[in-house]
Image (cartoon, rainbow, N blue to C red; front, side, top):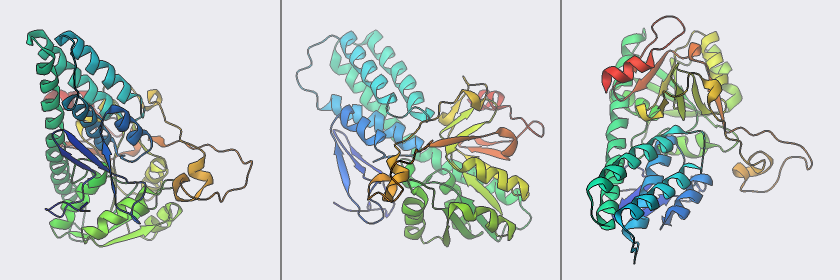
Length: 370
């Protein structure tokens, strides 16, 4: 199987109607291989085990796993209502795979609306399934367009705000590129846009312990895209900032509360504190689907805890044990960065800025851009 699509862009998700293959990101960068996803059980496991990761990619992969299942479903004899109930249950099952990222839950809500509307007029189950498949495919297309818009808005905004927009060095954390989305990327999409405009001097990526998404995935993408880049240890970020080598920090998001508090990969909060201390702007880049207006603050965000093996063993838990036997482990996958540490939230509709020194009015922004 080809490692890269014909347009030379890395793809985490390879989809044709009735067929879905996901790049197994656990094996990158040493091995490139795709897993065939035949149904929602395969999709749930791929999301849970981090074959596919990144909030936007999780949502699209989950939706498409169900699209493939129903496309290849033989002998469904139920009514249109039965088909709708079947899809509802499968979507609820997929949402349970990883609780912190809101994009999958948001996708499920929107897809359920499509299913309900189709069920109100359809006379058979085939029509319901067809409506679902088309909606899931549109999500795939929309994610790529959304990411490119994030990149464009972010690049323009940052250049207008920084003193020397011709020589920018951007620090990022975790992986937010083509491998974390349907294509192009969010935070890494902004970096890609800055590079294409000739103003990026260097991108810095953290290793992102313990699963090493930065050293395995982000570094892999940056090298592939021929973007000048340097890998650093997570613990080196403060020293890098102190040496005046960082123009801005740009990270992604798995969930943004209505006040701007943001859940992202563990270690993001530390970077935000360091950035504030060194007077460096700290930006979050994420689609509007990552915003959860039902949450008033980050205190309500559920933080997923991962297997102790990710800390105890090499290669994010896949290799041999290197830690002392008997040691206890606390391994949260995410932390929450308070809104007061965030300079702006870059979305596909523009950049959300603060109404005063500490608060965002995200609800008004979402309403105005709907």
